[in-house]
Image: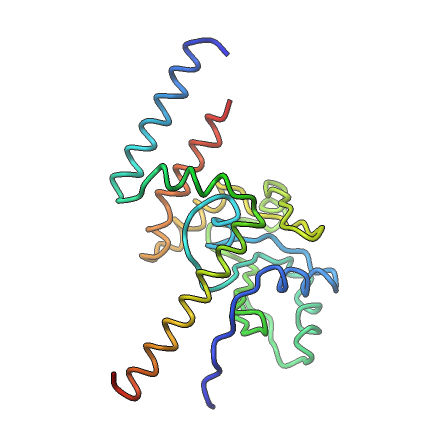
Length: 149
Length: 67
């Protein structure tokens, strides 16, 4: 199979596409770190989605060829999307969503972004070099959040 | 806020800044990024991701065709 050229990342477009059919999600990973104020780079969008909404995501793909699993790595028209239903260190979707912060990202669109404590736990659990690199920044942001007057 | 609380808060921030610097990051650069709105941060992320993508594509072409 020929390798597809990687698409440019357009996070708001991905958020809108998922929101339209009512998929509930919390932004996690590097994109969440950026939204929370971490000056880091990422080439994909990470999300924790409600497992019961997997069918709605499959409908977006236009087919029933996707099978359920804990992680979907999706190549979309708006960049790479990692959809995690059971992220390591993330706990249940309900708990993550309850602690997440609603964040206005322009054009009237608001998305839920994982709490810093959850982002730290997930990065620690993932433990890859790229995760460990972001941890000092997330911990710094957490202290900053806790010491805001 | 009591003076003791202010001291504790500043002390924690100073320690956090020192820990961040120990990893080679610049706390002031991080502070500046925090001034951006989430919308601006997303736009910045999109620009950076585009640069990463272009770099990867360029590297792949170089590997295939040589410099």
